[in-house]
Image (cartoon, rainbow, N blue to C red; front, side):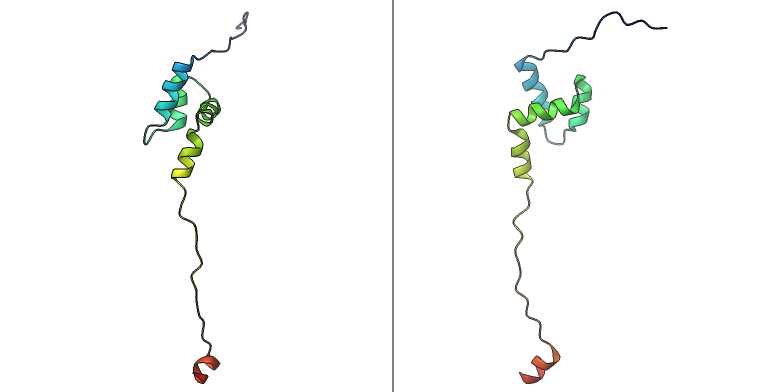
Length: 84
């Protein structure tokens, strides 16, 4: 039987380490979950760090599609075609 005697301490990341991890997650084609796993952090924590530097909003803005627009359509029924 395993006896746990000490509590696991929370890791304190330096700003430089956070910046390096966030930069790695911002690389084209980077998988956020894989980056988080590689560094041993939770994906949610990495997402919070990305949000703090404004990366999430910038990436979302870059991926938005152009605004949808309505296209005018005229439907002519049999009665309208006969009168014309």
